[in-house]
Length: 192
View (spheres, rainbow, N blue to C red):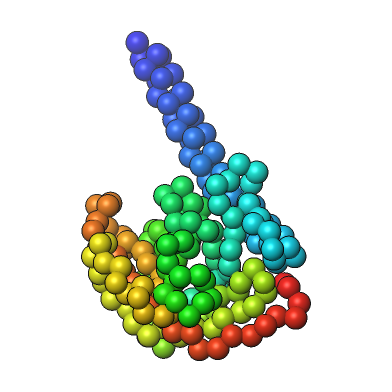
């Protein structure tokens, strides 16, 4: 009896370890494929480049936040599936880099965890697939209810994630909203 119980525990442990390793490998590979897709998208600015052949999204921009040490590729379409792999542009909002209110969402325990450390006045950039770079400055940080979207009527870029950070409960109704104003933009002569 002890033998079979020990054997069962061993098999269960190996199974859990293997499953955990698979999830970690899949996450690493997805990030690698998304970065490759972004590099390809810069070379072919008029194409929707998917990170893998069956993806239901494509890369659309890259967020660079030097003071937080973050560079993140952005996917089109803020669905639950896309958010599992990268921050994503909420398509019903304005076009990224435009004068209209545009929204990028991300998970607070992965890609957008750094938003808890952001301060008003910090600057960051968003590179478009065309190579153009738009520079932003944080104008506000607030906690809102998940049903609020009236902020999109104002121009700017908005970054949204669940709140509070490090919560034991998932699915809270609160969101952290980081609002940023366009400071300037530049046209890239070389795609990098």
